[in-house]
Picture (cartoon, helix red, strand yellow):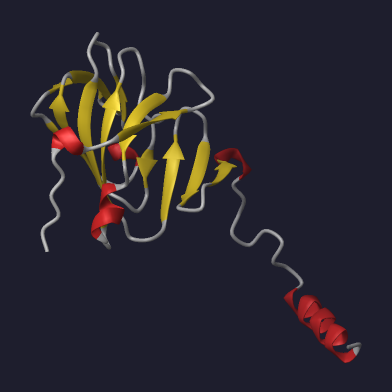
Length: 169
């Protein structure tokens, strides 16, 4: 079944973060309305002088922006470039796909944001050193990263303690 979304009938709501520079208007979760299993997509409108999400990349999602109206500056690991109406930007998984938009104009910038959704993603924020486990919104500082085997020593003692606990039940 085809699902059609007419631009003049899409409703938006403001997403304002605690940091005033991060604010955008977003459509209803269009993908949810379709029952899509592997794509998430929304239409966003970025007001003049505002930034999209903090500079980030995904470990388990690809993302595409299609600029529908207006223009914005795109930040990537290669630098900054202007995106104009009709432009398409693809962001691969991993650090080379890091991105952020800034509306440097006096007009809103509307864009279609399409992402793959494989159920679980890890989003990293190079500017602030954070890691976000999605969709749970569990956010950690990457500076707390530890060795895989930290705290895993004395395995036999842990097994014995577990067995003693069962005997006391």
